[in-house]
Image 1 (cartoon, rainbow, N blue to C red):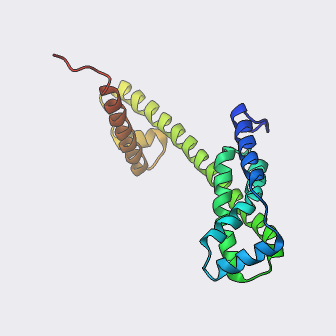
Image 2 (image 1 turned 180 degrees about the vertical axis):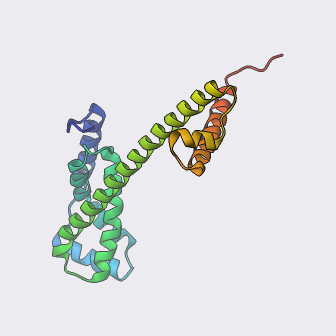
Image 3 (image 1 turned 30 degrees about the horizontal axis):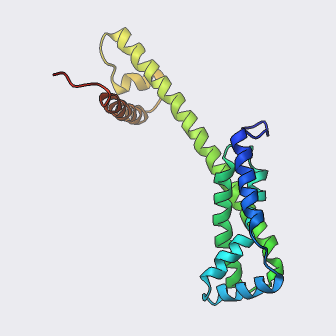
Amino acid sequence: MSSGALSERDQEDVARLAQRVEALPQLSADEVTSLLAGVRAQEASLGLERLVENYLGIALAAARERRDRGLEVDDLFQEGTLAIVAAVSEYAARGEPAAGLPEFLTRVVSAHLEATVEAAEIERRADEAFVRDARLYEVAEVGLRSRLGRDATATEIAGVLEWPTDRVELMAGTLAAARRLEDADLAQYVEPEE
């Protein structure tokens, strides 16, 4: 969603997540210090869990900031939560003062979510490019079959598309596999003849 407006589902997701995060009791500075020491000493897995819970608001805020960048708020929140788990462990291992933890977590979560959004955008563009190339291939294949009166060779299709032959062969194989899967999916709905 690029308009910045949240769908009804996203609004419900954000409200549900916010309610869950706000319901968690917040730790005092002394509790954070103590839990960090326990995590550093690798004595407190519950301490790590409690620290992560304490800072879930950071993940939610970061997810809200990126809600109009192509991913669901729930997915962004989950990614942010994973980043917090790793960042709390790293911060505890460093032995730095508890007061710096929120700022550190904010930076780590922000960087992680930016990378996640960028990766999703790259994947989306790659998918669009594949679909475009598949359509071009099919148009060339059908056009040549009609003109030649036979199936075109990979070299002939490559010449029309100005692609390397190995790219044409890869596309042909990929589309053939997709067609077989589609045929298999459709076959399950066809009743066998008696």
